[in-house]
Image 1 (tube, rainbow, N blue to C red):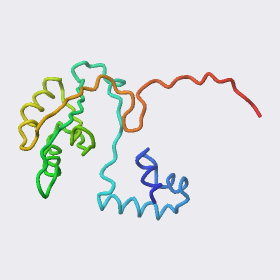
Image 2: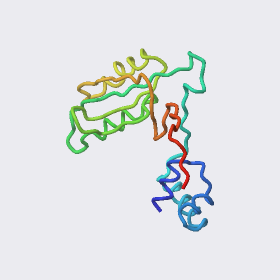
Image 3: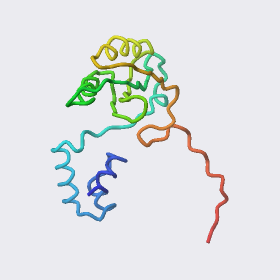
Image 4: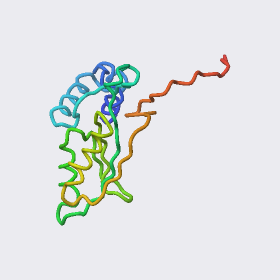
Length: 163
């Protein structure tokens, strides 16, 4: 059954018939499994990965992506979970991870301008109780996101070989 989820994660537009053919699982079983995962929340949503640079030539439509590392003071009984949940509720925040290393959380934030990211950090994030420090890293160029390469594929220069 894991195969079904991996196929959907790679391409959410695959039909149940195609998934059944690829996995060897009957179509009815594939459909039932997908419906059950959707109902239980295991499948959260279906989405497209868009290369906005390839479709948008309007400079006012650009956004800024930043990774913000957050150091926290843990609280007895909840650790970092309550602060992480609070941060995740902000509209600017796309993801929040508990990470190892010198910081405790890594957040992905998307905003219209660098100033908007700065305002988010200074006015919303840093004012949360137990946030001790932040480190902001701005994305300058995206090469790959969600498993999809955003660079032009290099032409295959190998000579054709026939058996």
